[in-house]
Structures are given as structure tokens and as C-alpha cells.
Amino acid sequence: MIYILIIILIISIVAVVMMSSLIIGLIRTGGVPFISTNKKDFDEICRAVELKSGEIIYDLGCGKANFLIRAAKKFGANGRGYELALWPYVWAQIGIWFNDVDVEVYMKDFFKINLSEADVVFCYLFPEVMAKLESKFEKELKSGARLVSYGFKLPNRKPDKEVITNDDNVEIGRIYIYRY
Ligand SMILES: C[S@@+](CC[C@H](N)C(=O)[O-])C[C@H]1O[C@@H](n2cnc3c(N)ncnc32)[C@H](O)[C@@H]1O
Image 1 (cartoon, rainbow, N blue to C red):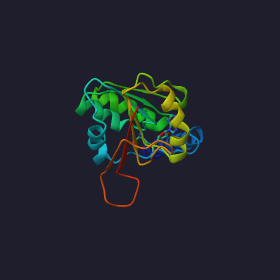
Image 2 (cartoon, rainbow, N blue to C red):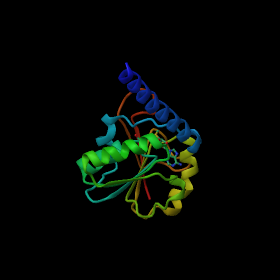
Image 3 (cartoon, rainbow, N blue to C red):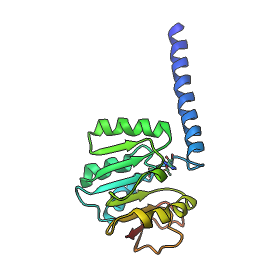
Image 4 (cartoon, rainbow, N blue to C red):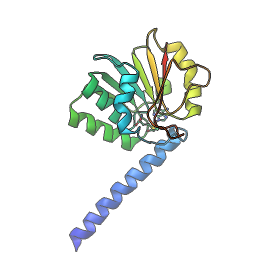
């Protein structure tokens, strides 16, 4: 009986920690939730942005870093992720350790980092956040860097390339590439 109570207590503590970390994450990010990019689109995104081995790719709001892990494993990229929500961040660290890949994830606000070392920047964010990032990209991205946005366009810049991986009229599966 005591063992069952201990197991229920542990499960409850884990559930409370997960829920509160997601709620605190939502508060810290100004309401941008953790939603994963569709795994079936990972390789298409890397091909669309012509990701090469050894290139540095940033994922702004990397969640569990599944996209960066795939980009490192299959395309030989060097991944850097930034994430404010605790639970996806912890999950990302476990995934990186488990897959033994060249990916680093930091618990930092991506508005406070400098993007000048990036060859490629990946975003799966909201339109309002892309609008706020647009001038940062203009200022900090080096010449030749590429931005790949999943789902949402920049408001003022025309994409150099668009790839649609589904025929539904939804954002998921829409990939926009910008060259700087
Ligand atoms: C829609 S999810 C995308 C997750 C991942 N990039 C993917 O494609 O699977 C957006 C993530 O961005 C994170 N985020 C939002 N604003 C952030 C900020 N200013 N700094 C760091 N992370 C942020 C959220 O916590 C959330 O996990």
C-alpha cells in the first residue's frame, strides 16, 4: 500500500513540475507555446535551406531540440538552440546526450543573443514574434546567411523560396526561405 502511495506521489510531483514549467514558459515567452514542428518536415526544411555539413544552425525557441538533433545527425550541422521553457529545455538536454550530437541548447531569451555567427536560422514562432525579429535579422545576420521560417512569413520581406509540403490550407507544412 505504501509503495502505491509513493508511486502516486512521484507521478503527481512530476505532473505538477511539467505543468508549472509549461505555464511559466508561456509567461516568460509572452504566450508562445511549445508546439513541435512536424517531424516529417525536418528533412524537407534542411533540403529547402540547402543546409551543409559543418554549418551553424540556430533554432530560436528550439523546444525539445528534435529539429536540431536531426539536422546534426543527418546533415552534419552544428546546432545551437535557445529555449525559455524549462521542461522542453530539460528534454532537449536529454535528447542531445542520448543522440551524442553536435548540438548546444541554452536557456536564454533569443532576443538577447547575437545571430552573427549563424549560417542558418530556423524559426517556428508566431507572426507577431516574426515581426519583432525582422529588424534583428536585418541587423545581425551575415551576408549569405539564410533564415528558414516554418509556418509564418516575415511581414515586410519577400521570401526567396517557398516550399509547401501539404495541400491543406494551414500553416503547418509551409516553409519560407530568406537569403541575407
Ligand atoms: C512553436 S514552439 C517551436 C519548437 C521547435 N522550434 C520546433 O520547431 O519543434 C516555439 C518555442 O519557442 C519558445 N520561445 C518563445 N519565445 C522565446 C524566447 N523569447 N526565447 C527563447 N525561447 C522562446 C517557446 O517556449 C516554445 O518552446
